[in-house]
Image (cartoon, rainbow, N blue to C red; front, side, top):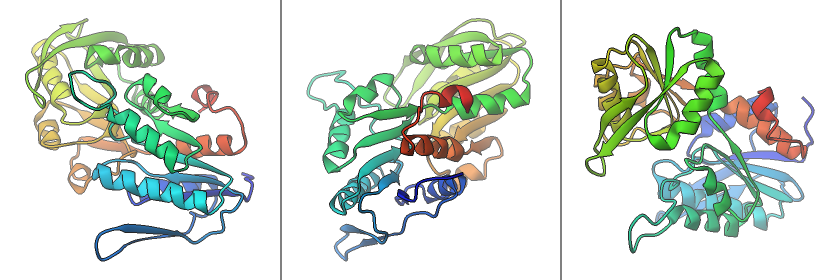
Length: 317
């Protein structure tokens, strides 16, 4: 694959394995950079490659520890801008703070917009992201955003399993469109869970809209955070006569007691992507499978670099 020598891909510390896999797909070396801490804890980044006039991509998921990884991304962007890079793209496989996208009560911030603003101010010319939790988050950035979806990877995997008597289930009303696309792509029926929130971390599946008795179930979502919603839904599915239950989600955040809940819940398989590097505990769980988005990201980077269509990737990938 021929790529202009002016393409440079750099990696933050949040997900170096994914960045290395992207560079293998592109058949280019990972950009050289030294990331250190001063004795007082401040982070400093020194780019070792000459980036003057180059097209630079910085791969950094803003996952846990979120604030540290956000700050590291900002320093990286500023470093490349001051080194006279021609164009800088912030590649954010997982965008932290995405769920703080509105004022749902008084005297709270819209932190997703704040982070979008400071990424732009730090020097990013465009953003490449995967499943921003809500489509409207693209409008929070005042620069171009290329928005990919984990459906491209997840649906291909589940299609290969040839699951019979399939019902695709949305774990909440907000995810109906995603579930409908999965159902149309995989030839399954569609069902929806109606849930009620008991507290900030506890959710109860109250009712299922659709047929699950005697059916194999695929629940699809963009994020598994505390896993409260899907685990509660899985128990209700079993009570209603459901068969094997699969879960497909782009981002495996696995916060708090999520892994314990998943281990105890009646799932046959939980599939996530490597937008967030899996923890050792998650890797040891037999029911969790991690798929790589490296080739999808690499293809998008190649097309952006060549000024080609990224949207056509959804039909050709």
